[in-house]
Length: 110
Image: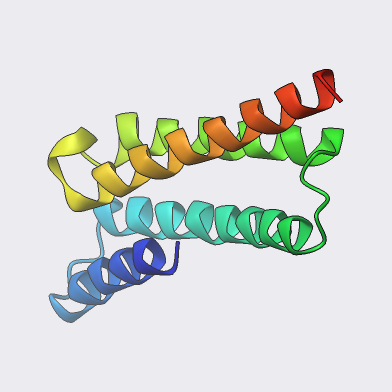
C-alpha cells in the first residue's frame, strides 16, 4: 500500500512541478485520498491479524470491502492490468477476497 501511495504522490509532485493545475491534478489528489483511507483499513486488518482476530465478522466484511475497493481501483482508476499500479491493485483485490472467504469458511466449519 505504501508503494501505491508513494507512486500517486510522485504523480502529484510531477503535476505541480509542471505548473499544470488541472482537473487531472484534482483526480490524482482524490485517488491519493482513497489510497490513504484504504491504508487505514489495511492497517486495521493487520492489527486484527496480529491479535488473531481475523475470523470476526467485522474483519471478514472489512476484507470484502478492501477487495471491492481495490478491484474498482484497478478497473476504473489505474488503467487496468497494463500498468504496475493496476496490477498491484488487482493482486491486492484477490488477496483480500481470498482472506475474507478463508475466514468465512473457517467460521462456518468451526
